[in-house]
Amino acid sequence: MAIAGGALAAALFCGQAAQAETLKFKVLQNGKQLGTHMVSLTRQGDATFVKSDLNLVYKVGPITIFHYRSACVETWKSNRLDRMSCKIDRTGQKTRIDVARAGDKLLITQDGKRARNERSAVPVSPWNMVAMKSSKAIVADNGSVSPLQTIVLGKEKIELGGRRVDAFKVRYKSALVVDSWNDAKGRWLKATFKTLGKNIEIRRV
Image 1: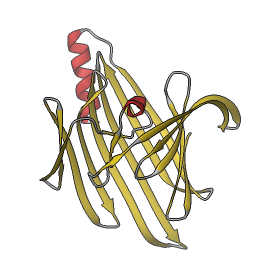
Image 2: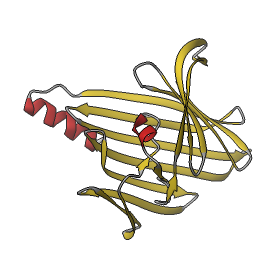
Image 3: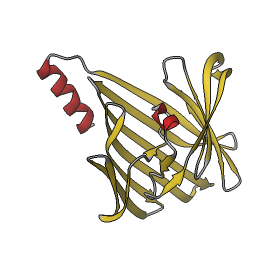
Image 4: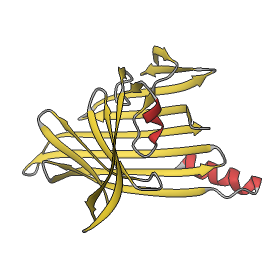
């Protein structure tokens, strides 16, 4: 919220209107709700400030078997990643990933230790289709970099909120194979992937 608030204050000071939007999603595992995902976007000029929170909890009866929480902030300038910071909590095992631009390179650190330098890698953030132009993906929960292939699958209709809507489908093949759907304005609607034998769906609400 501090980043979004700072962007809004800067916009008011400069006499420019900041555009703010919050996208809310539910996360399903094999059709049953596993958690929630929220993405807050604030756009001002050529800059976009992003705050995303992912909260997953798996229980058997009243007992929590595991939880996964991810809190990330991103700054994009002229459609280039400028900075990203993610805090991850896997059932009490915590880590932090930071990415910062230095000239034409991105410096990636994990828990304060430099992991690698990259020129062209970006996080696969379905709200932002810039990943379609990249050949490398930053894995936000561990800081690794994987080859990325993007396949444009075109227009189709999907069920969303009890109605059928037009959507544009893209498949991202990296550490995971993710199918993602956006509307005509590029707004993220839905994503699906499979991990550990489970079908995961992230759906706009």
